[in-house]
Image 1: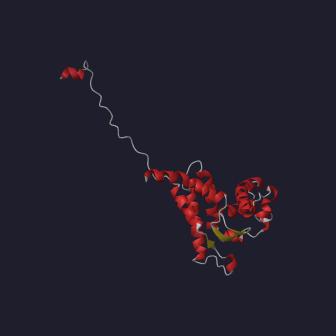
Image 2: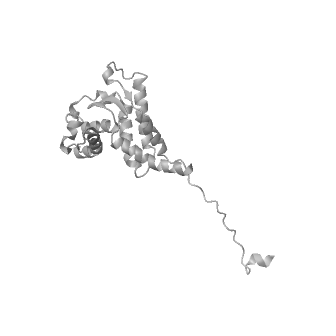
Image 3: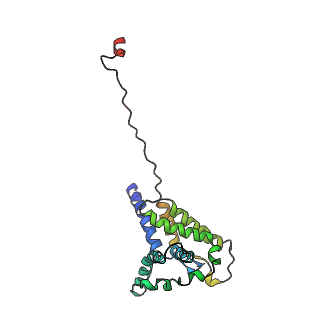
Length: 201
């Protein structure tokens, strides 16, 4: 069982990476570009609107998921030049930021989830867990507490079962084992036969 647990802990960051970068739907929430179903869509729409990164960097982030969706739906590879049209990001800077500002937990959780998925391949840590928990809290706050208020059923918040997989992978990516201390006993130095201590005996 210990070997199985260690193997799963090693694979958990990779599964989480594929969930995020292949853009497997985790939720449905209104965002700056319309309706977003993945942390990558929320993050990319905000990055384009704020112009933090160049457009080609954002395209490189969303391209793996676009290819995966294109192959699954109609066995075609989307064009690099039309990526922003597919994700409705062409005029993202002109869209109202109210949707993102009302859901700061979802926005921050998406940032942490994308960054944690990328960093987790090199060194698994707690960033993915924080991002996933922020996402869940933001979705629960709107779905149960009704903040912000949403009266349109077409734009209602929805959580897919794949969110549970992301949560389990995020928690499993953390290495809880502490390094063991060395239990070797240091040898006690004995006096040399010709030393003063041996002469006093």
